[in-house]
Length: 314
Image (cartoon, rainbow, N blue to C red):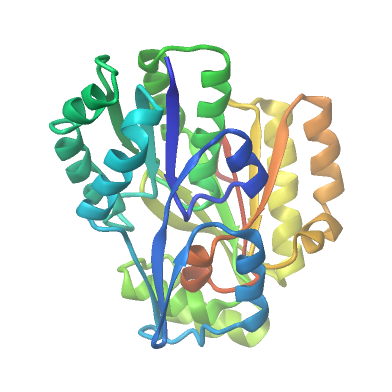
């Protein structure tokens, strides 16, 4: 059985990993001022986006615009119903974007139209489609997507993969340390996220105090504060290394950064994390943070995610 994976472009996986496993990208349109661009997770274009710093950070200056149900339906009917027999569509949290709802609407329509398309191509087998909200953001989307590729490679059937992903999603934890509080305060407030209040924003901007944000099961919390971005990054790396030693539910640590990736490898704490991952057969997926993420949390942000039922927020 040919099983495929679709993710939206906010899913922070390296482009080479996406291409290696033929993961399909559902792009997100971005409006930046009067300019409209599509985020296809092109690493060169993403780095240019960070270098240009086109986004001024005002609440209404930039926004992400998800594909409509009709656009998603076209993507499936024109490409995926012939390339695969079953597809898992993993989206950003349904509480933070309408992509999940749009994908569900498109799926209902696709399942009523695919038979004629496959029959015309000489394929009479059924086509299956599951749309799952990862209930997370950015690298938190990457963990279940990466695990899906491993399960497909092992020859697991869709029923096993679906059950495994549903379980994994509940225990996927994402941490983020922003570099630019102006972005995250304005954009998060616009979307109803109160994890960074005005007092924390004002104090953090004045004293360079960065919040440590935690995402899990559609909720966001501030779980700590550190002085300076590099201290926040070190804290995230150390926390991930400790969790690897305690045990992970899937052998992945997903990291994304809103800038050159060499910067991440040079940050204090990354060396320890890399060594710990090797010792425990855990793969680190390091990727540029998507342009979609950047307009919401600002350039220079660092995101890290893993799946562990044993994880306890400190």
